[in-house]
Image 1 (cartoon, one colour):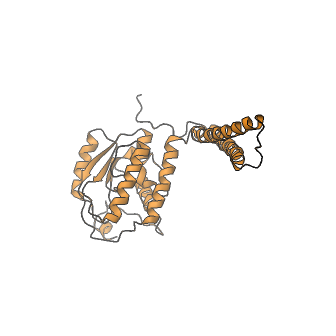
Image 2 (cartoon, rainbow, N blue to C red):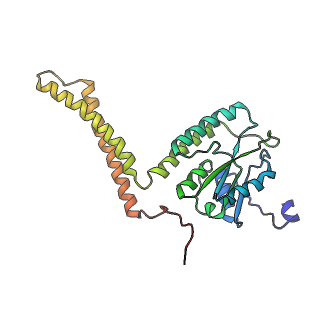
Image 3 (spheres, rainbow, N blue to C red):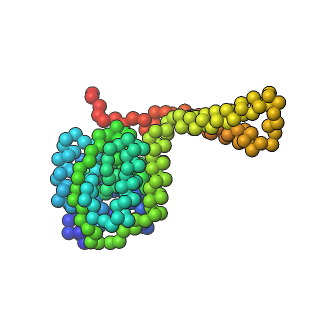
Length: 257
């Protein structure tokens, strides 16, 4: 409030309660009016003097530039899980970024207006932007030891991050084609069960007893589960088709009129 009173160009948003980082970013993005938006954490570990470098990187044609805390000043209890998390995210999403969770980022306005955040999805803004067709880049940034506040990072947040990774992977790969995922898994289970049951049919024709064998029950169960999973994919396809496949499938860069 003191900063706003001293300079009316400084604006702030106060929530009634702590709603998380994704909600804070979403609210900030909603009311931001500049052509370029810079985000950074409030713990002052990022160096605001590097903002000009982000602007230059955007001028190279990028729509989003993410910071990479190359020499991160955090304990190994944070850096080691972060490296594992970033490696898995990069492999699953096929986006070559080293530090997805770095809060120091620069965006063109079109990017922030085109992305919807919830849960812990702020970690995956580069993934969501890339999926929309925006050009995503990365640059090394300085990282200072934490001087203010206390980190709330822990195993619970790490677990939430990985569950949201599954969400993002599904949203970016299978949201518009659920049968590709459920159909593949269901077909695999169905075929495994079919192979087992064909084996027992052959034994039955050869005169051997097959009733009461656990493997036979497993084969039947695999076929039933496979059929149900495929049915789930078909239901998903029906829902997607009924809502229209054009929603969010494209992002317009500009009109030539």
